[in-house]
Length: 318
Image (cartoon, rainbow, N blue to C red; front, side):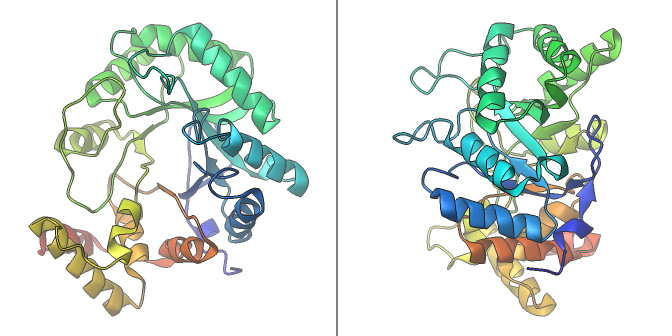
């Protein structure tokens, strides 16, 4: 990969001086299910294509034997070996409930500070470029969370902050509190979003969130940057159509395949381009596990879709 397509797609995030790659490399199982040498190869391939935005989390791989902290440690080791920290934008997440007891939230100032201590140490860096609150707990006032994060910004340990899996009502409350107090606001939001039909489910404080009409309307209204995960629906559009796919998903799968043929692209690249080109999109996290998957995903950087294409992919009409 030497065509630098990834570098051609970038966004700006408040608090971060570097342009940030619109295609962000997710690393949930780097250093665990994906061994270190393979993880390094993926990171090298991404950087060689101009990518500079890496997403990890304090809790990543804690569900695997010996996996706790592996993702952050692997990224840190890779940056040290390559000597490229200054050119990379590192995002990690804290405040996730403990895997052993997910009913207990961890958004108190002492929890945030503890997770941040661990992440900085594992990554071997002095400052996190983008620090996400990995989950929300409506029982904790947004002001308490924002004040704790502001303290870390003032200490120079965080440059920018974001909210992962936060409902629109809480995002709105956080934005209002930041505006009224002069605290640093969230610069981005991160939920699950892809071209598959959203699967509505009841909200519980520690569940992940998927894009729905309410969330889409909020991001349209607020213009808060959305950087979604599961942006390619776990490779749904790159695999044979499942027999049990919903009618909506089956129709979208076929339209993705048709557009991919027409544009001489792969279905996976079209699915990612849908998020990159969407008016409320423009950036996305990928979860490539192999070099071939990485090449396929990064190819989306050169795919340009019109508003008519987006409407047709969604509904079969422009």
